[in-house]
Image (cartoon, one colour):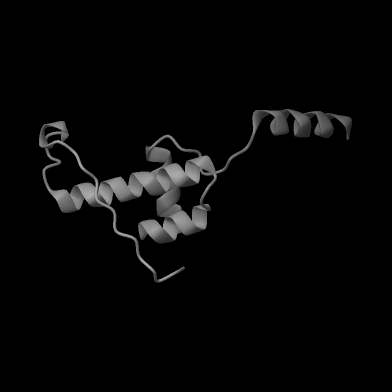
Length: 90
């Protein structure tokens, strides 16, 4: 992992924040985690790197992905059907 850091500023109107999200530091942590989850979901970041950036072990991160509706293992339905068809020929 690179030690170089990038700090971003996100401009949000205060009334857009949900109740309980008034702490800017907590919101920043949540936004960072959601960005990491989205990067993994899109395939732009590996599961291992996402877990490391999120400060979680791999299994905890897999649970975090699941809580956000993101599959930890991308397995295409077409691939599954091909493999099942191959198994039937054996």
